[in-house]
Image 1: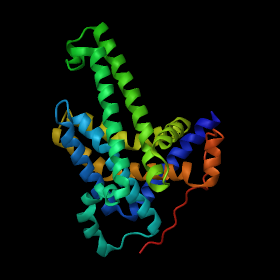
Image 2: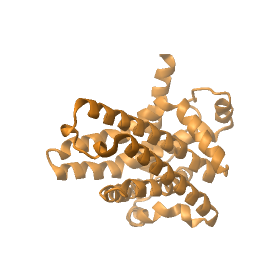
Image 3: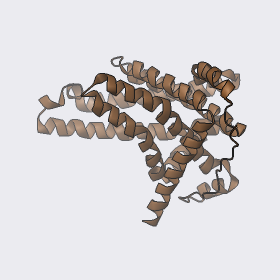
Image 4: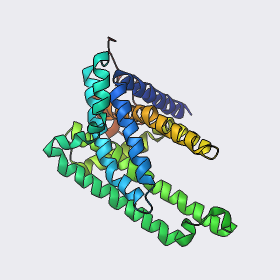
Amino acid sequence: MQSMAKHLRIGRRWIVIGWQLFQRNAWLLGGMGFTTAVLIGALAQIPLLGGLLIALLAPILLASNSLVVDSVYKQKMFLPAALRLPALKQSPRHLWDVFRDEARIVPTVAMCVYSTAGALLINLLVWMLAGDAWVAKWSTLGWATLSGVLAVALLAFVLYTVLAASLIYALPLAFLQDEPLIPSLLRSLKACRHFVLALLVLMGLLLAPIVLGAVLSRFSLWAGYAIWLMSGTVALPVFASGLYGSYHDIFASPEARRRMQARADDVTDRNFTLTAARR
């Protein structure tokens, strides 16, 4: 119970870190989040291929965001008012920052292939297990068929979670610490396993407005879209910045590395601090 409370506290701290980083350059990070939400929303409307296209782009967006948030963290200052509008205008371009360095292109493409292949295999498994019942209206299914479809949906969720867990820290490790890709994938999985409760707290920040938007869309489609765009503009960049904070907590300091190697399940509150002077 004490360990659970400690991990919940860590998750809350990562949210605070994400909010602090977001405030430093809300115009740039918010613009990136808004563009990402629009892009993912558009791709999700494409039948069959939409999910695979999102899986293809996910490593690019994740890597670029890690690089941008890392630069925001290192600047240690809030964006001056005169630079806010230019930062907003340039924000969509920063979604492809990972391609500005030729040395990062091949690893990024490899991760895109890995992510897409993983999503494709999961989708094929789902179709093999559920068949046409997967795309049928659940209200038309019998209880036995519906329970089978729900079990397949749970399996797909678990597999997609494992796929995402292997990626979220692999790319920051590869591009911010120059670690090889395969060991980075394994270290990412290990870190997510150790800090699953803290990461769930951080994930709740992103899922809460999405669930709210899904509920509101049943009453007003425009309200659902508005909540989705608002979550993309604020919740998504705060979540991504908090994810960077969690990476910094777990991997950046020598003490944290020794702790992970010893299979510890905690980080101290002293690993990651933010200091900035407002303009």
